Image (cartoon, rainbow, N blue to C red):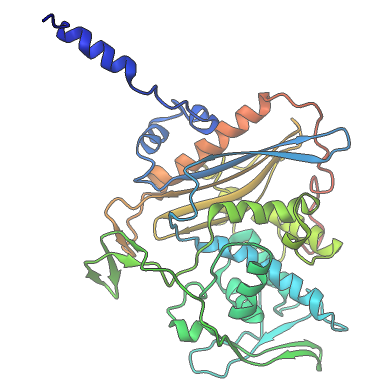
Length: 415
């Protein structure tokens, strides 16, 4: 009996194995970008990376057509959405005002939040507003400009936990918005929202009583992450359960942004009940930089241009170019960094949608403030944004996009 040489057997076995899977466009664009990107892309499961990149091509009538590319996008792989939940709350608050259709009630009507429970916090003034009073418009502006947590909490209270979630789910968005931010409240307390009054001088325009969501939002099985958590200065050496935390997957985030920027491109049931003025307000403030705002006025050494612009510019505190506008909402907490953005270069005629999440918590301990945001997170998101932007600058387009309904714009006095 004759035997094949051992080396020939190895060659034959190798030739029978499946070829390596071809790299997608996202992986190709990120090849050899930097040591940080190389490290993250070599271990994407460790960093829980998800990326959704949508190309936009206009036809002869300037109608957008979308082609989406993804890397590891999985609604079942949990990430804490942090401040990205503020965007749907802002949209639903605007929609509620339009649905109520009360005479004299609009985004600028002073909104006074009262308290009944001992743990509730009232809000009757806002020194950052030109008139010294809070309003839906001013809260949304603070959310979009610097991601203000209290502003989100006030919109959450205006909406009520039940209607907020029910309204978004009715539009087809898969999410759970279960709690206020930066406040240690129980699930039962987060189901209760403060009484609110809208006033015009001494006149009551609209009053909303305290509301309790009688149908608790169902959560899935435990979502255990990490190795431990610091609680009141002491280490709890067990994984943290995120089942009771907010949930807002990446695909839903980008689709919601698309529904606001390109409402005609999504099904009617996915759209928000917004007026032309609402859209103009959102477009202006989603892309406004802190230095362009007079009310509130922000210290630009703290609130620099890229303070809430992670993609392309998150690893730099330099002034952003005037010809690039980013309409987005970011989030960062517990080691998770997220950015959901529409990026436009008015000079080069470039536009695209890009959403991404990365998790940087090497020690696996939550609330110890030892996250690798500066060393890994921001550099990765910055390089990702630049890699896609550079490709978009050379990608052939049949027609140059006309984005004049979105940009450019100039800040008006009193903004």
